[in-house]
Structures are given as C-alpha cells and as structure tokens.
Length: 104
Image 1 (cartoon, rainbow, N blue to C red):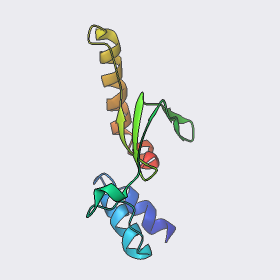
Image 2: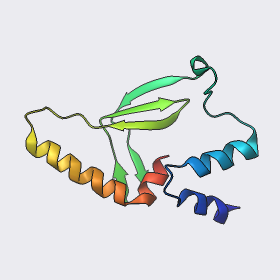
Image 3: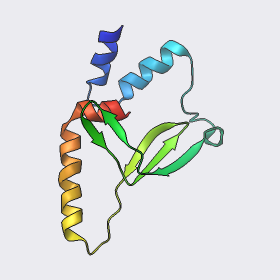
C-alpha cells in the first residue's frame, strides 16, 4: 500500500490522484465542495514546511480544513531583486516534486 501511495504522489496532477484514492478508501470528505460553508478556513504567516533537509516558508499560507492549499509570497513592487530571487526560488521548488508532494 505504501508503494502505491508513493506512486500516486509522484504523479504530476497536483495531488488529484492521491486525493481521489484517499477519499474513496476512507469515505471521509476532506473538503465539502457541495456546501463550502461547512469548511474551516485559516490564514497564517510564515508557516514552515520541512521535508528532510529542504525547508519552505511562504509569507502567507491559506488552509482549508487544516490542509495547506495556497502558498503566497509577498514583495514590495519596487523590490526587483527580491521579486527575481523569489521567482527563482519558486522555480526550484516547482522542479523539486518531492518537496511539493510533501507539502500537500
């Protein structure tokens, strides 16, 4: 079963296959899409996510029912160096699917 879950996490579908497998096996509804008001929404700043030696700490994280679904980086518009550095960092993170899957 663990090998099957690892394989599902390796898909490049943003976790859809894993989510489908998880919800179909347990019968638990992680997010209520039918009545969105039944969900719990939270926003936090600088929530650290770790996977081994890798670490990611976005400025803002939006959680639905405790699941981190949205990561945002905030930069001043005149901070060109900071914006370019963040674009580079996000490209590195996107290329590292292992780190992305660990955060989902």
